Image (cartoon, rainbow, N blue to C red; front, top):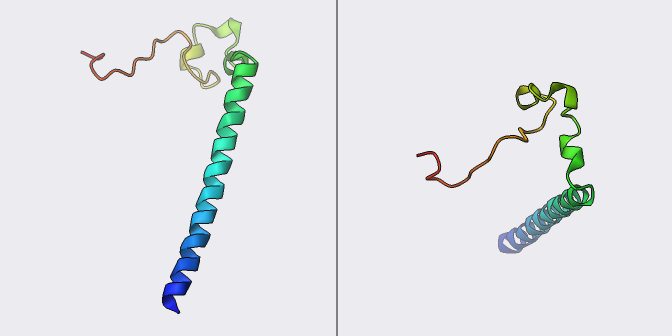
Length: 77
C-alpha cells in the first residue's frame, strides 16, 4: 500500500512540476516575442532623453545601455 501511495505522490509531483515548467516556458516565449516585436524599444522607454547622464545610475532605467557587458571569465584581466 505504501509503495502504491509513493508512486501516486511521485506522479502528482511530476505532473505539477511539468505544469510549472510549461508555464515558465510560455511566459519566457511571450516575453521574447514581445521584445522582438517592438525591437526592444520598451526596454529603453523608462530612460528619458532628459536624464541620459543619470540613466545608468537611475532606478528608472532597467540597465545601462552604454555599458559593454562581457561574460568571458578572462575579460577582467
